[in-house]
Amino acid sequence: MLEEEPASPVILASKLSQPLGTVAYHVRTLYDLGLLELVRTRQRRGATEHYYRSVSHPSLSDDTWERLDGVSKQRLLTAQLIRAHEYATRSAAAGGFDRSDSAFATKTLQLDAQGWEELAAEAASWLDRADAIAQAAAARLAAEPESQVDVGLNLQVFEGVPFSAALPGSGENENEKAGRGGGSSSAVPRRSNRPARRQGSIRAR
Image (cartoon, rainbow, N blue to C red; front, side, top):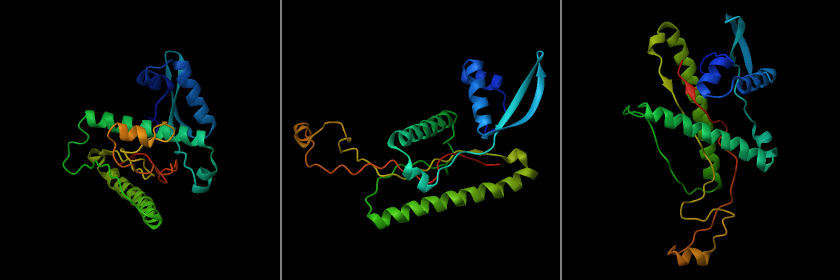
């Protein structure tokens, strides 16, 4: 929310339906970490209301990601996936995919090591291109702010587990699959927690 527009803990607490004390604590923590900046204050009912906005979104280098333990990776991934799901679901309910040129797709691919490297590089390059498009749009929006369109973008590249395969640690063996009519088995690939270099949304402005 603070990436989109400045707000105070009072406003955030109302939108999130959470206690003001809880929201204020987390806002203060983000501010102390340097992830928020104070943009203005105003007097409200005898108290000073502080408005904050996001300074930057944390990002991880490839080396840092590789050195994270499995639990930390899962926590970061879970937060990102929840955010991506909620953003897309809220937007879809409001007609966000109604335009004929909107995009929505899920693909499963079979690649070798070279193919994986090429696809990962292409995804990173495309995100850089999306940033460049947003920067160019910002210059035009300065002259025509009424033309702004808020755009959501989720991009994920990962090693997948086929829908026909057992999840690692599920205890499902080949006999159980055959007993349910699973037929021939496919090997479960090694799971990788490493996401695409960046994920998130681009606000066209």
